[in-house]
Image 1 (cartoon, rainbow, N blue to C red):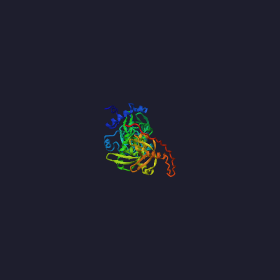
Image 2 (cartoon, rainbow, N blue to C red):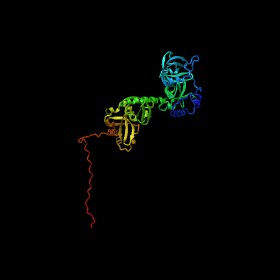
Image 3 (spheres, rainbow, N blue to C red):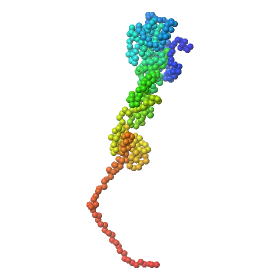
Image 4 (cartoon, rainbow, N blue to C red):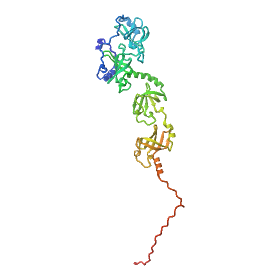
Length: 447
């Protein structure tokens, strides 16, 4: 026997395989500290006692006989539904007649409206639905929980796998400090959300639904897991969503993560990829400038691959495409102003407006011959260009800076004045130079 078994102290835990992983994550999150140290509060280490009973009340039933064990073994077992009448309310316990000679006890904190904080006061004499949770041999009472209610911290009813509502009352370096009813609990940081949160303070004072991961009655520790509950809900919703998904649908989603190539959007149980090319009509270099983790956005379903469980999403499809009016706004011959967005060996791309870009070929950058595009323009520079060609179907606009340069040069040259030939003055005659005549003389010499 273990020490706990010898002392007669009940201890419940998850199955062996799951418990090992849970223990490792809790140990890592608590970093060698106890729950008491983390929560900075004293916790009594005594063994939890059974329900407080009125000493004047005569206990009905006593220790069950073997026959009663046999009868209840067929009809009463964990999670069986029982309907009973409230016969007494004493402090934090409600006593219920559940038929025959059986009497049960339900903690008062089980009477809470599901999903809310408002107590529902039980009425003596009224029937309610309950769920069997165990049997107290010492008092001869069946331990009950309210059917349809979420457990709220009764030590007698909590067990691993239960769904509970808890309130975050503190944050420490290992995770969250919570209260389930009046009981204190701990949630490791890795079990808070589907993705890891760097700043857990955003959960302070929030009420959250969780799965009980471990109940240690010896040390009065409850470990909760919100991530497991969220995963369960996602799995429930995923099947229905896959049946509903169709191309062209517009759906709401939450951005789960942002990568260099796009963002993953949770559609409520199914993740879809919003590729960077489908985020906006203009060129997107940084997806984080378009969406951020946690953003709630509307997206269009572009592709559904049920076999490989992939969904392609689009964001720019929900806004007007600026290229539909490009031919009208930028006809050939138009002069426009834009911003140089990208330089390539063969030219430069210029943004005329968000979503509409044109290209200046290297031969159209200047009227002179150039070797590199960077000799004329730089990224981010504002330039004036002339539209020389438009192809809206192929989403192409050809631009020129050289054309404007040639036009400006031609306009600056003075026009030659046309003068008629008859009106031209006759140039003055140039006097002829006198010709000197030399006398002929016989040449002397000879052979």
